[in-house]
Length: 77
Image (cartoon, rainbow, N blue to C red; front, top):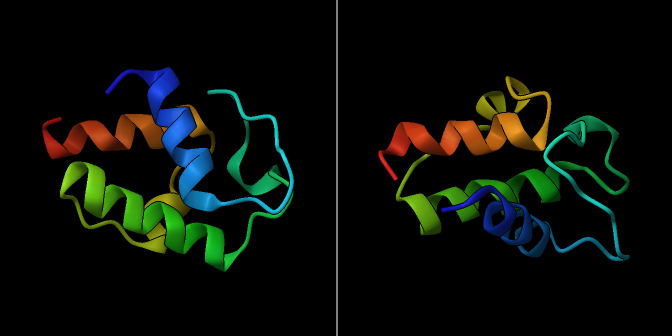
């Protein structure tokens, strides 16, 4: 999956109540509306898209969306 597609899927999976500009350099914890439900959406996205189980701790280990994208490579995709 290319980075642009990953950003799009991330945005869809989090289902922000309002449009949020997201780039690979966006700091995850600084995103407006980032909360535990947003994390759950990302966890489900990884399971569905990459057949990969991640935890909130895995997400916390990523500073930016780009870091989260790199995490997807651990699945072999």
